[in-house]
Amino acid sequence: MARFLRPLFRGTTYTRLLHLWVPMLFESVWLFIDMEHWWVPALLLVPLGLVPAVRLGEGVQAQLMLVPGGRRDRDAGISVAPSATWADRLRTVVWLEVRMVLGALAMFSCVWLPTFAVDFAGLAFGSVPGGNPLLRHVQPHAAYGLLVPIALLASGASIVGLGELVTVIARRLLGPSAVERLAALEERTERLLERNRIARELHDSIGHALTVAVVQAGAARAAGDPEFTDRALGAIEETGRAALEDLERVLGVLREQARPVSSRPTLAEADRLLESARGSGAKVDAEVTGALESVPGPVSREGYRILQESLTNVLRHAGSVPVRVRVCVDAGTLGLEVRNPLRAEIPGPGRGSGLRGIRERAALLGGRAHTGPDAGDWQVHVELPLR
Image 1 (cartoon, rainbow, N blue to C red):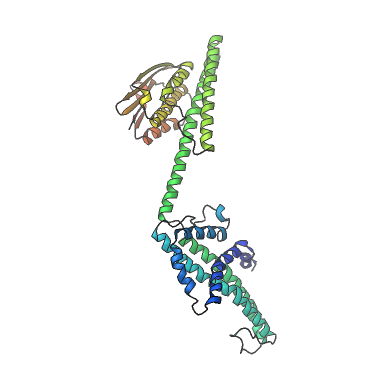
Image 2: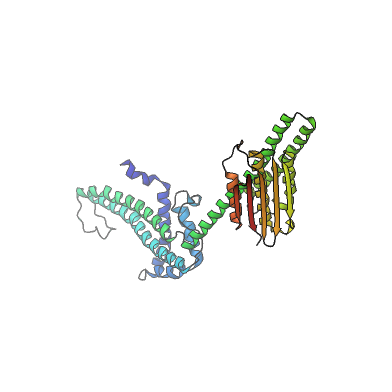
């Protein structure tokens, strides 16, 4: 029994009831003006529902009063936006009419059913109710006392049931349209792509810095040469400072969505990567053909990250080995190639996320990437279209 009565002690039950009562206030005022034409307010709802802003107001009301949690509930299933199409306008009209009908039923449940309960109690104790025309000629009898709890239970059940019903109908008629669902899906896709991009940025930037630091520290300890140790510490310091700048920039993107991406490094700063790799002991042979300044910003930024990840993989898995780097800018294509001798054993940790990130970056720009063994070398070959 307590389970059936529990909904009567929830605040949402009565906010839903209040939501149903709102249109009946206007109907009550109209009945004082013209009771004979009681249907006029329902007719006026048709042009009202065609106004785009009405759907916005109804959506706000429904979220606040019908859904537990109100507007904090992102899964409420009720749209808060003006009507964008004629289908939205027609659904709003239907919603207003249904809301008025359910409001009339709610008024009957809250007013007339309790009134019947009081009249039944009076008949049980011998008095004849004079205000209720339906019971005016009924003879008093003690058996009418049995109808009192039935009328009260029916009133409570109607209040709860109508609240649930109006919520279901609101999700159906005020729910997001196909256009709104598509827009929400596109927004979610953009957020996921942005999160993946930031994850790649952190992986490439911080991973490169940590790899250089580990390789430099190991080489300095093995060399036992104070001069080499000083150079290694200098390279670690420079790489760490650059990594901190990258980390601060990525965190700035997380804190401020409108932050521009123009501050990200480009291929014009590739010398910093090459010097960092040389400082780690790798023998880098670099050749740049074409004007790097002519490469469009998005391509240049992604090319920088691809080169950074390629050099990181060399240092992590092959160590201090000769590396050939070729950057070629010709009419319409940016070519990147990084080659190093293929070792029989791969000493460092790795799960392939770096190589997968290279391929993803190339694919997003409409290019292609090949990574793997080639003629006794490990090769990363990427081609990115400039247009």
